[in-house]
Length: 243
Image 1 (cartoon, rainbow, N blue to C red):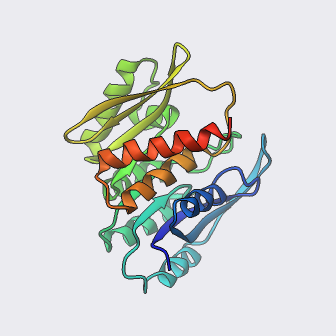
Image 2: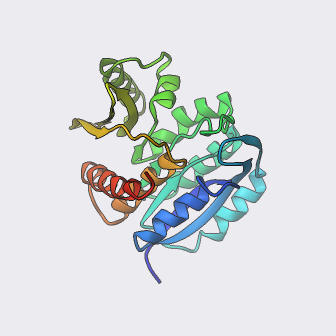
């Protein structure tokens, strides 16, 4: 069997994001996707209808079902839904030493709230420090930073604040300035900007895809910085077929 990547995320019924997107990316990179479902959402391509978070006991049962797997190559975390799910996943990770990429999903592209405010606080305090890399977009970074990011200076200040608070490498993605898109990576040794052209189309599930590509790169034994470069390269190649 191929090396496994554990995906802990919610299901988007439109098929454009969430678990469906994660499984597609992980499989395309030669890994076997092991899945833990956190929530179900009802969405179309453009509209959010509702969501349901799984029970804590059901989540624990799913995690327990994978306890016999000695070592996943990496873990990718997406939508968690509420604080009880966040705490349970954090507890699961505390018992394993494994590369983890967290996409801190707060709101869907279609406008539905996917994590409670209490859950977001728990995520920042309890879960992010247990991960290897997290990938907030500008809106998510603004939320955790406590003020709106309006400039490249704000991006770097937000990254510094969040890194000092969590001691966890991060990639703030999607700051748009003068028809270009800037991503900012920071860890204890590096600060680096990445620049991409602004696309005319905006496909759904890009955050899910990028974090999954990053998890795959870490799953191949790369350093955090190497994984960010490789994951972004794979993501840009994937995006070229979606635009």
